[in-house]
Length: 229
Image (cartoon, rainbow, N blue to C red; front, side, top):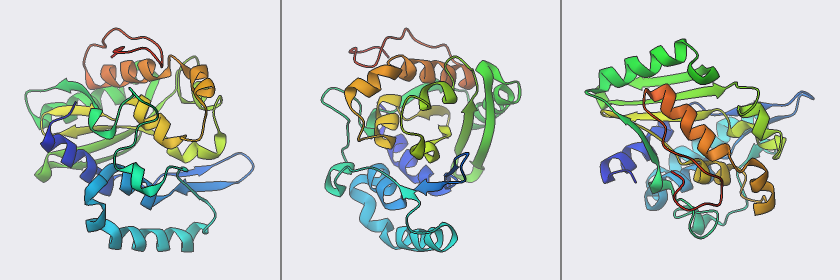
């Protein structure tokens, strides 16, 4: 579980992430629903950010249309403390990937590993704020066996704008939203039976992100097992 400081910084990092837009082969465009994701990330602090959410939504509607956005069917009042089902992770249960000697070492380590394609990854975007000691890296996982294309194809392709997966650097530590939270938040309407089709994916994502962070992955299990990470 992340510290109070890291939890707040992780929520604030949403403001510096790129807005994810998905384009399917048939030309269909979708984009993330800002209110849905802001409510999930900021929780009780959402009211402080309502004006910027409205402005962002208006700009996206003008550029891409009002029907292109997606979020989920989770009621607004439940997003602040969302979990897919009892026993699974909340936003605050983000995974710590690695602790470094300093912020600069964290950034150089992650950038080097991404440039080398560790675990078949590739950089999609990065935002680095040295003054705040905060950074976000969005990355593609390209392993044909366990990468993005392998598991997303088993879910709902209309939610492709949920990708890429991201890693956060906060001060001298690297974090990621736990996949059992992050995937469920992106595809909340799917049944547990559908999620079990990607039973090993949460562990595989964490193993990949940990390798990119320069850490050592812990033992892993499947979607429904207690304590696999």
